[in-house]
Picture (tube, helix red, strand yellow):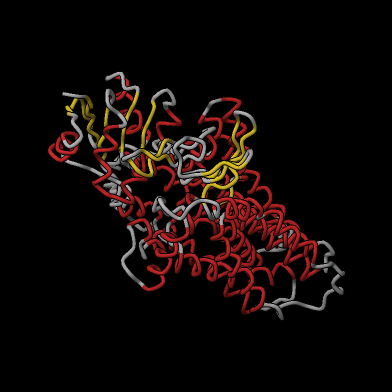
Length: 542
């Protein structure tokens, strides 16, 4: 319920919506003079078509064409497309962005049910109930159910599946646990290759706690070829994409974080401690553990004043007390051992992600694991002060979980307050509506722009407007791409936007610089309208 009541001021996230809302890639220029298009099915193209497969230099970089209908095979070189297939099919059937939002929230609810079931089997009934309540009120879980798509859901589900398979094999010797482990690894890596970071935390925690168990039944034999086949098949969208893109010439090519070169530079910069983009700040660890809404002033310029709720501090102290109790007693039971395992796993996963991929949306992949840890900790504390199998234990656990529930509701209530002050029109619902009003008011049919955060927004919300994006060419040629971009929208309009942060993709020319670029190719521009954060120009011949 909270997921539908919070973040209503969040607009469509364009680069995410592209994967489930479009049958063709957005019109992005790789070069402007002469024009060269990023979509592999739009000549002249810098992409490639092989049968039903289309390789493009923009999202989705690989798609499967079934007649006129497209399914994303890969969103980018490290993100598979299948997690977005349910949303793709639903949007094709309904044309409704809200329907896709409902789908993602419901899938999040299904994940909560799975967490509850896991703890009913391997923890305690109290731990299962508390973990489900915490996850259902966790801002980090709720917000990104609305903001992002199926990728994050699959990443979290894959982590849970691996934990489930590992724990079943460790304590019951389950025969098919290795196959389940392979399925979990394959799903996670297919969803996003950054899954290697939480996966490394899982494997390290398993190794460090391998002796923390009582005598168990002998493990049943399970051949290795099944999990290996599962990994190979499930990751096939990414390696098929890599093979197809290997057929493309090395140049010309967009410089983009969707491809390895730029991403590798970002990883090396993060590891070396160099200055990172605002959204990848070192402070994101504090935002994750403290006030997650403090991310918005850092990343998007929100005027919200960050605050650390004393309820959150109390919540972490309760979890810490439960962990200390679990290690102090060292009971040789599966649920007690699971608490100790989770107390090792969560810090390892968070540390791995924070060191390499510290954008908040990467860190929130750990939300179900944190909920499991908290549920087990609170269950352990409740068991020390209340009798077993009594209503008193349930009420004690709820009282101990109350700080987390309170802070979750507080964060949900503050979210729209934070979003309302974000000065980026492409990010908020009110900003996108104002932008659409501006464009409709001037009968815009063909529009040029050079702003990455606009990419996918208008294609989803106003598909009747033909948008020509210049950010691909700007990533290679910067301002030299502007005259050729203006030539592509003669008789139409050009939009200049304020971005959330400096990017190699964006051009924000002044009126004078835009006029000079137009004059260089025998054109003229005239301002016809503006809103806060956006200026609209007509483009024509003198």
